[in-house]
Amino acid sequence: MGFTIAIDGPAAAGKGTLSKAIAAHFDFAHLDTGLLYRAVGAKTLLGVQPLDAALKLVAADMEDTDLRTPEVAQAASKVAIIPEVRAALVDFQRAFGARAGGAVLDGRDIGTVICPEAKVKLYVTASAQVRAERRYLELSAKGDVSTREQVLADVKARDARDMERVEAPLKPADDAVLIDTSDLSIADAIAQAIGVIEAHTGE
Ligand code: DC
Image 1 (cartoon, rainbow, N blue to C red):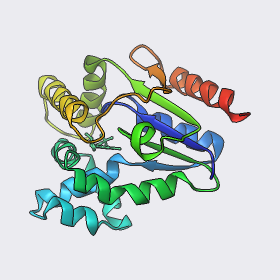
Image 2 (cartoon, rainbow, N blue to C red; image 1 turned 90 degrees about the vertical axis):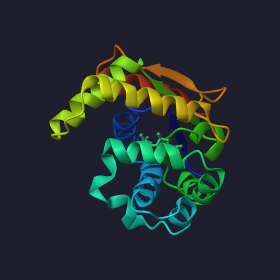
Image 3 (tube, rainbow, N blue to C red; image 1 turned 60 degrees about the vertical axis):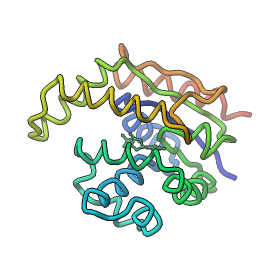
């Protein structure tokens, strides 16, 4: 089995940016597992049953350009509560994690459920206010008209749903290293993460 890096944390904590930078630095493959749930959530908005959507998911569904909207994010968080939907997505994620060349997976349950044997587990977080502000700036740059208040409420609703669900709730694995990006620049967060991973590479 290759070197697996599990990165979990709440919405807009910086997981995506960190994961891409880490994957590029170590030349590992990267899977944004949130995209799987977003692709299923997007289908439910079109009337497809969640389990049906999960069972029939294909790679092209993840390339849909509309998966980054607030509506799809909420729909993703809702389908992610359903145990059968989660179960349908496990094998693909585990196979990705076991890639010989090394893999970085980011999501909510990577270190706890999908890859509990990962060599390095990071739990990336930031205050709800900081995360909402980042998401707000990202959305307004894309022309979205949501207010700061709406974005903060959305972030908090998604946190609650992701952390309080029964199946695979968002929480740090016992052996995860915590990185709080609230007061870190992107460069500092990346440097910190790479430092943690390098400390494990000789093991
Ligand atoms: O990381 P993201 O914001 O794209 O994730 C969207 C939703 O998908 C998130 O609110 C909960 C769900 N999700 C999950 O339950 N487990 C994962 N490993 C990744 C995402």
